[in-house]
Amino acid sequence: MSPETLLALALVAVYVADSAHFLAIGEALIRTRSGRTAGLSFGWPFELAGRRPFIPNPLTPFWPELRLVWTPSSAGGAGAAEAVSAEMRAHLVAVRPVAWIASVCAALIGVVAPLALAFGREPLFVAATLLCLALSAAACALTASRRKELRLTGLPLFSTILVALVCLPCAGNLARSVAAQRRWSVGAAELPALGFEGIPAATLRAQLQEALGAARRALPEDSAAHSALSEQLRRLEGEAREPD
Image 1: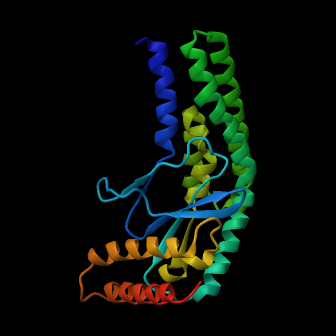
Image 2: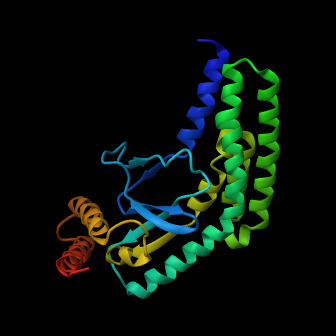
Image 3: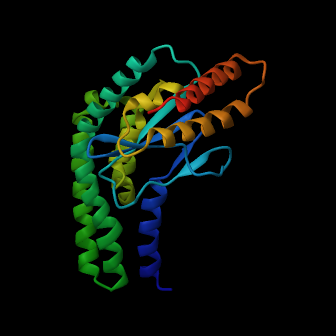
């Protein structure tokens, strides 16, 4: 296999690997679509070093995922979940311009550049790389200018921008990286109140029951967290018996 082919494969592999999430117990990933919450994932059904991996669709970097920490208590109730949902939508609006620029970077460095290498079109490869670098710089500048709306400052902002500028395949995931920097906290039983589109309530409750059951098994039975999770599971089971 030629060095050009290896480099082409490496560009794609780095882009895909950089988009991966590794979710601990108590964490979830919200899939989005066109500025709306469209699905919930607790990761793939196996663990690596105690975390569940999840790789989003590499063809949709313009729909960044949101990170969520679900808590065993539900102090705020459904009203708090609805407020979080509104904040998420506002966050996605702030990320959207960055997402579109980053998506062009992903197409250039993840599709055009590898194909140019595979077919020996060196000028096209150089042009795609330089254009990706310019767009990455523009996306980073836009991210910095929107740091207040994105609530991204200090070291997280600096490291996110640095990675996107130094590693061009990572620039395609800039919106995903920016969106994942902020994490919301919602009571486990209130997650359905976030208003997911395209996912039946029964399916969502089944996912939640599985995740809460796994988390409860990892806790001592006499702990407060175990009792709180048991209460959340009872609430979900009660909702499941009610007609939707």
